[in-house]
Image 1 (cartoon, rainbow, N blue to C red):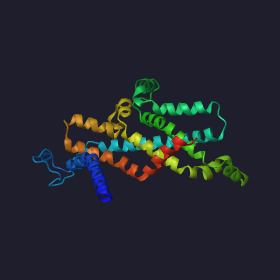
Image 2 (image 1 turned 90 degrees about the horizontal axis):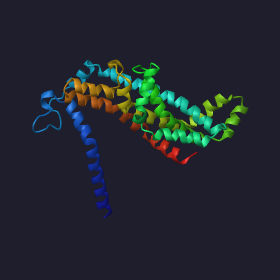
Image 3 (image 1 turned 90 degrees about the vertical axis):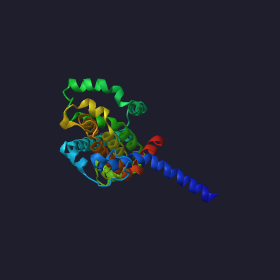
Image 4 (image 1 turned 45 degrees about the horizontal axis):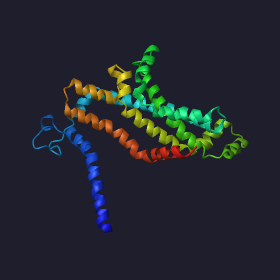
Length: 273
């Protein structure tokens, strides 16, 4: 019975995995098919004569620059949110802050507000101060979205570092900043990686903010560029699927590498502090 039960569980898992991965595998197969074979009957599960013409077309259309834009926006936003988040998390943990519970609730509350709910006033504000359709607007907004989570998880990890370790370092001649840098931050590495992973996935997968705040083709993110590519070329499915595969690789790699930190960050933030 145990063998049968395990076999049934394995079968269910395989079917679930096939359902989840099926569209991605089909997109990957389509991206390597010649244009005249995409709608072949019967359908080809694997391309008979693989070609990279669709990937070459994406490069010719400048989608590679959109890829670089998305990468740059995500990196800048993540670094800014980690620096500010770790600083704020440490201050909330080590220094007396007036109405500290209320401050923490504000951070949590901002995480519960959907981004599109404040999109219109944000666009109006960005336009009024001259940031709309500039390179800086997306990293600023992305960093703001990531910051509450970064503050929450880093504060939770700072709570596990005994204050006596910092005091001992200061007795050895370290300044407060040196003690934090050499004693506290290394212990917060899981929290920082969790915040960085969450932030990168958020930035990379965004479409609504990127399509609203940026109009110039040279500033578009990859997600936005693919939508425009689809419209301009009348659904060139081969090139569109090639773009989907390119857009899927970075978040999948990041999640597989750092998933344990991301899951641990959510768990720690929910039970500590």
